[in-house]
Image 1 (cartoon, helix red, strand yellow):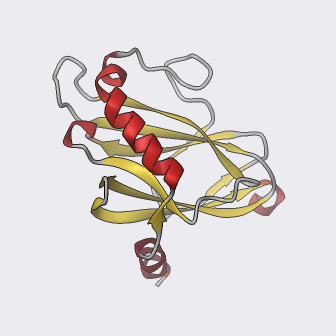
Image 2 (cartoon, helix red, strand yellow):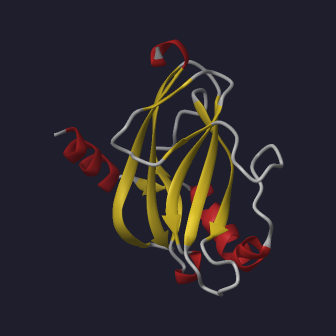
Length: 154
């Protein structure tokens, strides 16, 4: 039931202007990103904070923590993950960058993993809804991650 509610809500969402701009930047820089050494938000090869891969599991973090949503992606197809509207509550979770790590860096067009980083800004609850799309053409189901920050997470 909860999964169906999320899917229905996610299906009625629209892309944010910021997400579209981000997708354009990802597409424009996709070739450069795939050739760069992977680096996390703290300059290391691993992302800082906690990683979440399953939208069916709650994202529970503390204020001040960086958390990462980890998703499979192949930007060479033109389909990239975008945040849909309504955007997450910026008083709870704020985007903190992203990166792509190809599975096979030596092969052009290789798929890989997209790391979407967020800062847990303040106590509360919000939802981050993501859709893989190319312009106005969406593919697959939207994913909705339920985020709880701070005291509400305990």
